[in-house]
Length: 87
Image (cartoon, rainbow, N blue to C red; front, side):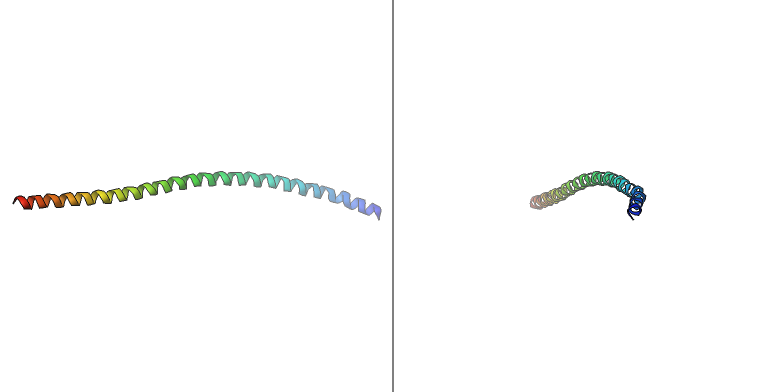
């Protein structure tokens, strides 16, 4: 029986080594993939930040545009009042 156990261990050893090596290689591949995903996330975050900054600037431009049109309307009204006054 002792011989049978030794033979079983010797027979199982290549499968065990193969499994360990396979897991180690897969871990390396997964770590590499994770590193690439992290790089992609960082690039996407930079693009999102840039887009958010752009949207803030657009909102400011819209606000300034509204204020400018309001001033233009006030100037037009003043001109019309002056024209009516001089008639």
